[in-house]
View 1 (cartoon, rainbow, N blue to C red):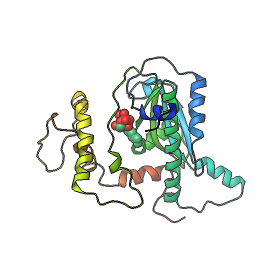
View 2 (cartoon, rainbow, N blue to C red):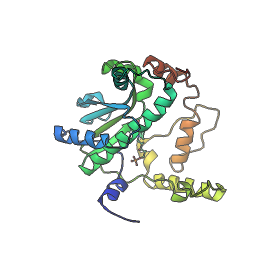
View 3 (spheres, rainbow, N blue to C red):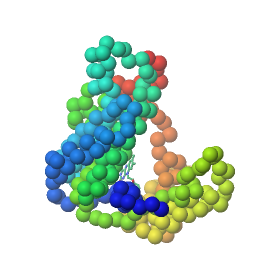
View 4 (spheres, protein in one colour):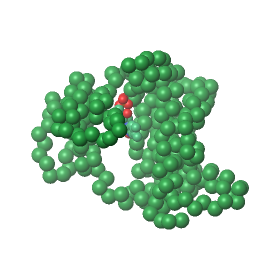
Length: 255
Ligand SMILES: Cc1cc2nc3c(=O)[nH]c(=O)nc-3n(C[C@H](O)[C@H](O)[C@H](O)COP(=O)(O)O)c2cc1C
């Protein structure tokens, strides 16, 4: 594999969930956000909220960014140009989510290169109404994901990833043989077991569906964990639709 300092920074990524109290300077914050802004964009359909109140995030990090899909400020520009928005909200959200995610990940990488650690928090969409109230968000701004950041007080190992053969498919999607699937599962599960990841966190997801618990922390690992999430959580999209609607997005309607 080719190596240079950028590739090394990317390969060294690990989510950081514990931080020292040291504040982050304004100059670094500006650098992070400008590095984020330089990500490729379809239409810069995002805004970033910042809170420096460490009590406001579960990991007590000095910085909490909330990355939002923001149609409101774009619609201001459309109004000035005397254009009417006709694109449907589902399409806008598809593009907006990509813009916002690319921006956020640039911030993560820039942060790492400056000695900062970070971790995404994925529940923002499900409490979009609360966040909207906290930050006085106008309609048509939707909190997509939060990002805590600060100087790390832990240095966890790199977490496993799928093998390249389960990720990169050249020219045509391959037949996913049992051997290929098993190998991918094994790489993930053995990788996390070797780090005692779930046992050290006591992070087994309880079974709420009709299945008998057969796993202990000797064999409970990533593939079972992720199956328990997407095999049990959020069968009904109603909550998310409601959050979107409260923020002024309607993904089912033609404009
Ligand atoms: C969209 C998204 C949401 C996430 N939400 C959370 C979260 O709520 N809590 C958490 O501790 N980690 C969260 N993470 C971090 C992942 O758990 C982490 O990236 C993954 O386990 C891989 O570990 P690594 O980042 O250390 O390589 C989230 C990551 C993403 C991309």
